[in-house]
Amino acid sequence: MVKPEWGTRYICYKCSARFYDMNKPAPICPKCGADQTKAPPKLSASAPVKPRPRAVLPDEVDVEEKADDEFGEMGEIGLDEIEADEGEEEV
Image (cartoon, helix red, strand yellow):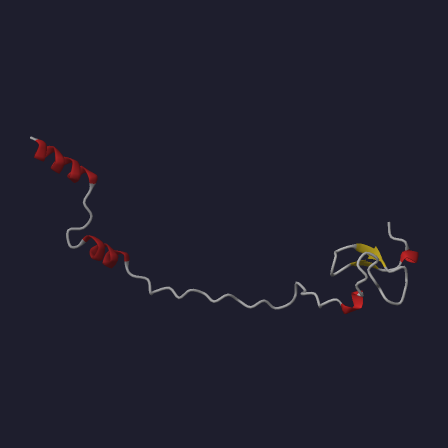
């Protein structure tokens, strides 16, 4: 409930106390005595924000070329082939 006789509501920039200026010419915090006209400027939401630099990604490599590089010319070995090789060695 805002009463016009209380004046403008402030939040102190030093101690964060909430108070009304009681229509006095200088809004001074009753808790710490800080003059609110000397408050540092606030950053607004519409202020431009510097974009973060993006990481440079290497050119995409074709999937088939990558598969040949990782697994050589034989390609990927399946689990069936590994189990069959292990079973033959035990006999």
